[in-house]
Image (tube, rainbow over all chains, first blue to last red; front, side, top):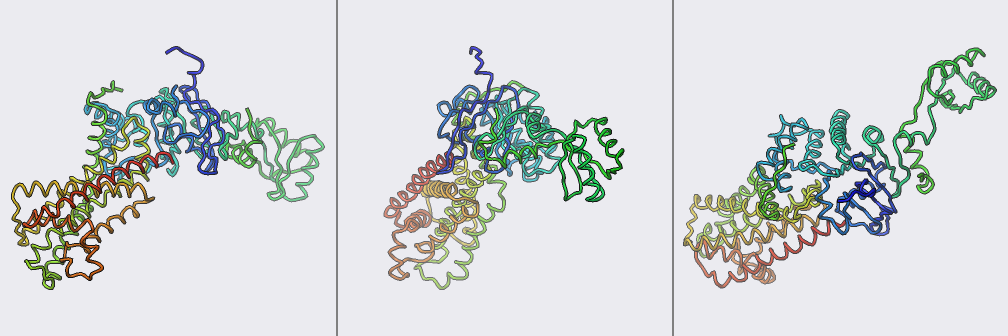
Length: 323
Length: 260
């Protein structure tokens, strides 16, 4: 096949819409995922994340727009799409009455591997996902994290060109979440294109090259984690003061020195923009100290994706669109 | 990774056999379900023979009269639980995953139904063996046994398919289980336990024309002798009808669930 710039994207959505009755669950979503990258669809419940994944994995027909996966249109060539993808849905789609190994072999058979090949592949994947010891136990005895790792392993029995992970760590404890993250990072390093949905900003921050914030069926923002964070400003230093009098003199002093500060009366503190360097903080404290304003405590804040997320989703979706 | 070797067997056969294998594994491991499928009919057999039986006049030994009814209950009740597994596959995302594969999706339903038939043939055989231990003496010829096997397998496929459709229709496993109660109740108002002539008039009409009566009379005729040819066409028509309706409804519901 001739290389065209178009082929650089493994997943491409163009003004995709999907309605359930009167509700537009996806309302003109554009998205491009580069080959070999990890993209995150981030959004609260009901934002349309799962619907987008269902359309991309041919489980749902879109009502409008276009969705192309691995070069195949999901509407006109669903069978070709299915041959190129693997889907790990929101709930661990594993058979609890079978062992982990049997689940993997079943999936291998359904991918039309020979019996011997399916068994060999099952053992490889058990090893890769650190499930060898549990491989001959029924999945009903697995922890949530183990079941989820098996679930992801099932998606890799035949290495897909695109892997869809719908909320891969929802409901997992922090340790299991880390294990699953490790597995996903390894896949990405091996060159599999991954599109994951999540409501955890930390997860998108950790794993994704590219984050698309969905809100109310529209793209509210997109970019790297750093780009999104930059949108709501830089770091701040929060200075806690003894009482309202000291707070007032601090505010006056900062204003006189043309330092933009924001008062937080409730916690008796002021927020001052800073670049976070030790010297800048020392200068700030020195300025106040020289005028007899004593700072009791200091906290540095970097904007988290959570703040970005809240800022973006509080606005009307159309207002927040940046390109 | 080792180079994956693809099988040369046609895809549909591989899909179906893999999923039938899965269904059989699940059946063997659902020990409690298997025990229920055997113990419940045996308990009913004991209750009907030793508790109620003395008071029921059927013109023959009550054990001889009631065993065909118990066989029917065992076959039908066991098959009726098929929808629970189908529903679990739907709610756990197993079906969604299968649909995202280049696999004939409905093979998962075939897997459930075939496994159900195999499971219920075993439990029905055990129930027949228990009734023989209790003194039941079938007079069936080899040909009768073969015919009985055929009728039961058709009935089990039919009820399993209907149950699978019901499992796709309802939203949770508990609701899917409700189908068993319908199937468990129907034989009471048939000739399974008492001759319909002893029922009030308004029930007799229902009892004679509902599917369980021709089915139980056919089973009775094959097991202990009696007029089979009069009942068999209706029995086969009902069982085949269950199968056709179940398969068509499952197919429609399966596709509908995909486009939701």
